[in-house]
Length: 340
Image 1 (cartoon, helix red, strand yellow):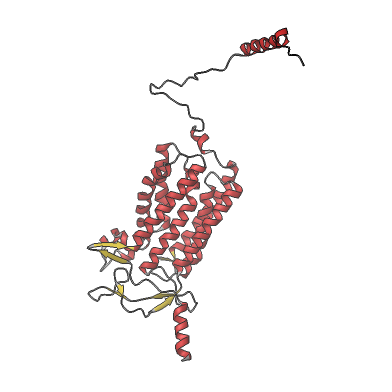
Image 2: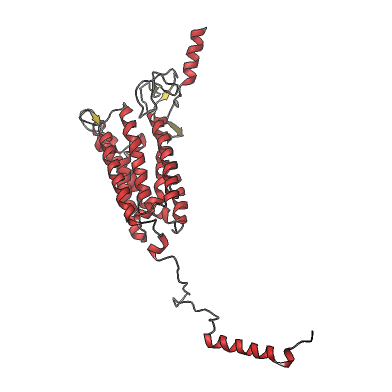
């Protein structure tokens, strides 16, 4: 009886995985990974819009920039993943066309941020918006979007660490297709007996990202960070966590000197972000977005394009003086004196 209770407690102490990551609406697959990415993008745009307006921007501009940044970011994220994990798609017995199947997971954040920044720069140039100020407004929303996106890895049963006996260990199930073929992404777990209990490194990163979001919001409000420093703090905070989390992961990855390539990338990007954060301090306090764009005091224009003229111009100084003298004369006249 004691062994049964101990086994039950062990099972209840672990984190169960979803039995699948794909549902079907008729022939249409509904993928949890894609839904998480979309939800993250929506949150990033919504929060970025609020912060942008608070800084003097115009409502709707973040959405306009996202039209450029999001597609560029998705392409960049996929390119980075395919380049650094090329062994999954190229070589004997591999299908190169699978590199295009973004719905099956695989987005490298480094490529997403890098190429997404190029898209944002194009959008900002078209709108006359300073890119560093826009990046500062978007920073906390981006890292929260990354946290939401990590839930997609949970549904896909991917990006986890080694075996563990810790209470928060993640149960990994064997998933199979209707034909009986084992498939961790498209299959369904029929038997919920775990084949492994592992470190949920995707969860570690999710929680770390939320902590980074709180940090940069606090620092931004307290020190009024500007000129891209909020974004640099986000990058430094994220890469600091990604460095140690990457060392825990056991999924297949490209190695350099026996170490995962993303460990080196995290360290290099962290150093670059810290250097920028320090150097940009010399640029002074947070920039006034409206003043930079020359939109802090817009001039109204009528339909014909002519400047609006005040209907009642202020009287000239000599007219004001004359009216004051007249009032003084009336007060001193006999008619204006009242008996007590």
